Structures are given as structure tokens and as C-alpha cells.
Amino acid sequence: MKNRILIVVVGLCASLSLLSCGGSSNSQVILPDRVLASQGVTATLVFGSLVVVNGQNDTLPRVSPLSAGNSPGLIVVSPTRNIAATFDSSSNNVFAVNTSKQTSIGNGIHLPGLTSSISVPTADPTVYAAVPTATVNGFAFHGAVEVLNFSTNSFTTIAASNAQTVVSNSQGTELLVFSPDSDAITVLFPGAAVPPVDTSCYTSPPNQVCTIVLDTRLSRPVNAIVNGTTAYILNCGFACGGTLPGGGPAPASVAVFDLGSLFVTQTVTVDAATMALLSGSTLYVAGTPVNFPCPASQKTAATNCGTLDVVDLSSMQVTSTTAITDGYHDRMDLTTNGQIFVGSRNCTNIGNVNNPTGGEIRGCLSIYNISNGSVIFPPDNGDVTGLQGFTTRYVEYVAEGGQLRVYDTTKDILLINDFVPQGTIDIVGFVGDVKAIDFF
Image 1 (cartoon, rainbow, N blue to C red):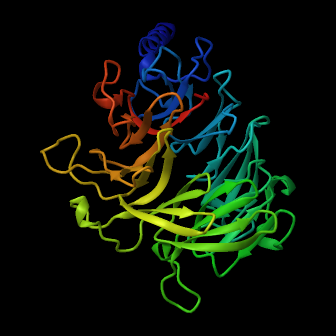
Image 2: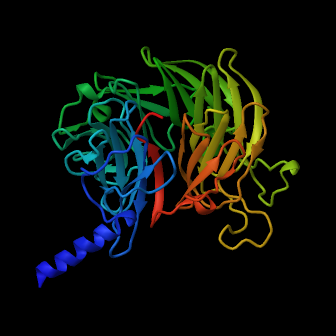
């Protein structure tokens, strides 16, 4: 009887291959232009996974998905795209995938808490994860950066108080760590850490493992964009509770930080800063200021808006500011035809895309046109948790409100064709992120 049940389940999974029954490897077909979408599900017969999408025509091929727990969300891909890592919030496990073979690397590595920030800086299967609630034995503080080695299926804990976000240099030899309600930057050199738990940040900084950077020009730093030996630090300022040394609200800013000397060299004040995108000598900085009213020209029911500042890095000047949707901005992507997709979470949603009544529908997505400075707000709802553009097609994949949308970037509208009814790739469950794993 057990064998019969097993046969039925296997057969069912085969028939539901497009619905993702899970699987740790795939020896069938490796497509030339693949995209991974994280699929979180709660159904009994459908399991969470990384679903393979055909990036040439926006379809779901008959290819086995990759196991990644029940609720995979965030996906991070190495610069060479040979490694993809995802975090499963239902098990607190990080899973890694060899994209060239389309197979899992080892087993999932368990984290001592949730993470919203992981980094895969090189072609090696080493993943860095910031875990703000990690408990460090023998110390009253919480928080750590976990160095996950998928070759040995092991990890080293580097204690870092309330570590929320981790950003690596291109070699994975230097990590910038940001903590909430802090005006400091923790700089880690993971190669010098002593396993299994390194507490250098608590015992004797600065040292070969850990340096705490304090500077009056830093106010609630939350993220960074690394370019060579320079990091552009995003200071959230008063929007994240930052105050000036003498009192009063601290402005948001971008600080230029030298990764060699660990010094701030200069800053530029911006309207808000939680996410940025670097293109040449221009930095596009997104965030939501405190009490920033939406302009009347947008004719929106939303009372507060976010901002997108254009910063000329050669002069360290803000050249323009555009109002965008509010919320906490943490997703940005630039298309080949000059459109910047900006996504946020916890924004003001207007209307209901699933039950339209003819009024305004607005969510957490803004699309900014570099050439003329215009911005549009597609009629959709929900947090934007994933963005992926292409170099060979004028389309953008957007994970918004748990759905995977396909936008035509020449018109900034949902792509509608025989393969993609109403601009949505029909993946069962909640789509938390999307990443291309091939160069195209």
C-alpha cells in the first residue's frame, strides 16, 4: 500500500511539474536564458522552490524546480552568475544552487534567525548573511554575520551587534555591516575570523577582524553601493531616527567612503536615502522623507511620497528630484533603454487591482525615465520584492504583491501576448524574488 501511495505522489508531481513539486537537481534540459523565481506555498501537494522561467518567451518550461524550502524569498546571484542563494523563512535555511549544472550545492545551512540581507560576492560557494537576532554565546549582545561555506556545509559566526545589512567588496574580503538605530559602520575582514564564533567586534576593536567606524557625518547608515575601492554609504538620517550632534533632525545624505583607509572623504545631502543605483558617474538615490507631500500634478490619493534624487558624483551635487511612491525603498533596476524601476515595501496602496472600480490604482512601483525625468506609477498593488531586466529584450520582470509581472519597457505597460495573459507569469504561490542566472 505504501508503494502505491508513493507511485501516485510521484506521478502527481510529474503531472504538476509546472506547479513545482520541488526537487534538488535537474538533469533534463538547461535552457540558454534562465530566470529563477522564488515560490513560497502553503498547499499540501505543491512545495516551495526556485522555479525556472524561460527568459526568452516568459513561459514555464517542463523543467524540475530546485528545492529551497517552503517559503523561499530573497535570491542573490554571484557576479559570475554561477551561484544563486536564497533564504527560506519557514526553516531559516539558506540554500545555494550551482546554476551551470542546475543542481543544489550541499544542503541548506540553518541560520540562528531571520535574514533580509545576503551576499554572494565571488564565484566561490561562500555566502554572507546578516542575522540581527543571532545570539552570541557569553555576550549580552545579539547579531552576527554568518559566513556560510557550502563546499563544507559549515559556517563561521562573526558577532556584530544587530547586524541588519551586509554589503561586500568584489573579492569578499571586506564586509560593510549596518545595524538599525546606529550611526556607525562595522567593517569586517572575514578571512581573519576565528571559527566557530569570532567575537572580535565585542572584545577589542579595532583589530584584524573588526573595525567600528564612527564619523559625525554618518547618520543612520543603512546600505552601500560599492564601486571598486569606494563605497557610497546611504545615510537614512531623520527618517530612520537620526539626529544631529547638537540635536535636531539629521538630513539624509550619501557619504563617500574609502574602503582602504576606512575614512569618509565627502558627503552630499539628499532628500532621502535607503537604496541607490550607480550608472557611470551618476547615482540615483531613493527613499522616503518625513512628511513629504505628493505633488498636486500626480493627482493621487496618497498623501505622502518618496523621492528619487539624481546625484552627479563628479560635482557631488543633486541635479534633480522626482516624487515617487512612498514606503521603504530597497529595489532598483536600470533597463537598457533608460528606465529605472524603483520598488518599495510598506507603501501606501491605492485602490484594488483585483477588484478595480475605475478609480486610481497604485502600489509600490515607480518607473523613472532617465531621458526626460518623467515618472509613472503602474496600476498594481503590493510590496515590490524583485526586479530583473534584460539586455536582449525590452522587458522587466517585477515581483509585486506576490505576482510575477512582465512589463514592456518601451511603453511601461504590462506585456500582453499569447504566453503571458494580462502580463503575469502564472506561478502557483507567492513570488518573493526573481533573478536571471544567464547573461542575456
